[in-house]
Length: 125
Image 1 (cartoon, helix red, strand yellow):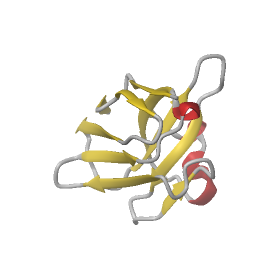
Image 2: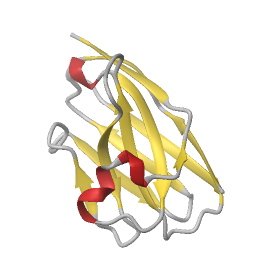
Image 3: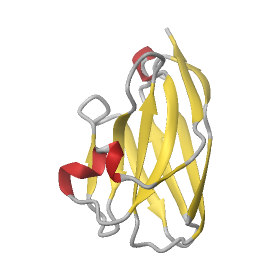
């Protein structure tokens, strides 16, 4: 079992930055792949960025060059640095963890077993 708690969301103006954190507890083996997903009202939850235990990283095309995912295994924490935020980035952001997730599947929400409660990001124009 893995428990995930996100933090760092908030309200910013377009062009601003936020850094999300996700602290893991329980079975915090570094063999888990971890990812950030987001869900806007009326839309499906989509993969934003994910990192495999071997360091492989995947980004959604919509955030490439603006968002950076990283993990600190010593602190059991996953991060998402979000720069140049746009109004369309407004959503609830969720952290997720799962095992044996590779390649393009890193951004597929159905591959993940554990989820946090989410943190809201609101970007105003």
